[in-house]
Length: 498
Image 1 (tube, rainbow, N blue to C red):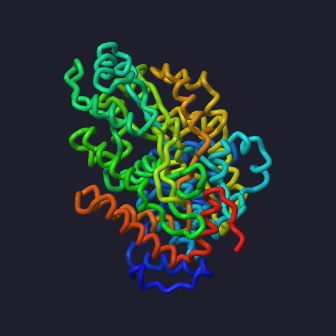
Image 2: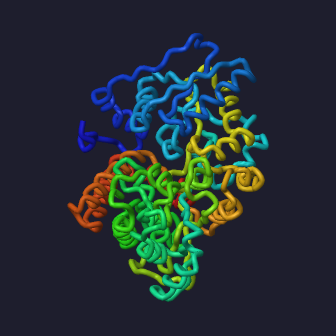
Image 3: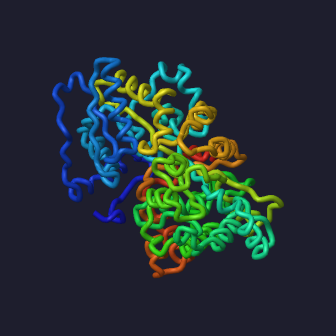
């Protein structure tokens, strides 16, 4: 059923969700779920089908059973099917799981079907240890609905050994009139990428200037968002990155977004010849293999590339905050405004993973006990130091535990890495990812146009303009008043009085 054929009444959000997902019945086959020996004594967990997130779910499930006597069965489905599998269970009343490990952005759609976090967790020391930036993602409509189990922001990594080489320093200064140092702006980042791209290392490796993800379905959308963050978040107009927070008109076709997308396209030429096929895993593994001067990635790069057992560049790393800009788009005046000093805007790319408990579970209390076990400081510290878990620092204790990070083979740059994370999370502007009912439909509409832009079928301006039209139609179908309320809340803005 085409989305355009679904007629809605703006105030009936629950009915709308059910109408929007009724298409699942005719487009998705029912997926089998591994059985269990004794349902009355088994907690059932559902998450994605990789070692990331799912691996810790299984490992902590075994130790939870040893501790509590309650067994844990972990079922995993491909990421592209995970949302639909969960929503199908909710709208049909056939939810077969006690615990869901999901992206934080999905909380908006799933919240009506979830139990609240119990006071035993809210009143404990565990909660205060979660960084406030990630703690905010645990709430929806003034209710604690989730527990953070992963923290995500983008940051940069660079080859410190290449940057510090005297001859290279001299050559860069002659070419650009400034010292070769980690980039503070996207313009500096582009110049450094162009400078290093195609250079031959002594071992014959042809170096890429930088690595970012461009593959369809390969996390490229968050790379675009990270480029756009600095240009589209004017300090005097908070919350305006994705929509005008008053009118809910899409902002993704303004000059800041067009500049970001054109910049993202240009940087592709300073990557490897197959840059268009790179996903985020390729970004970090190729950097760890010594094939690039820089990359943009989640914090996974630090763990993988800093481990001498898996990396050719261990002990040679440096890190930098997401590059900024000296100008920013003013959405109210429709002009670029100059800023005296480069301003970096922290973007919570993807935002991380959360754990939730369906209200229909018959084991709500025990389910929350397992989640608290999964995410406790000891277990989560072990997870963030293990490059297979996909879990990045989200607790204050993760950012302070220099001794543990220093134990990582080859990662002599632990103070630099943790310092960049701490500074990023304390930046004057820290912008959450898009977090609104209908999130996946909005993202899909933008991805469709990104496909066309990257293929050269349309310009950045035309593609973003068409995506904005799709977003406007989606907002009308989902209910502009309620969408505005949710968007403002997600962006930390108070609702305006009508």
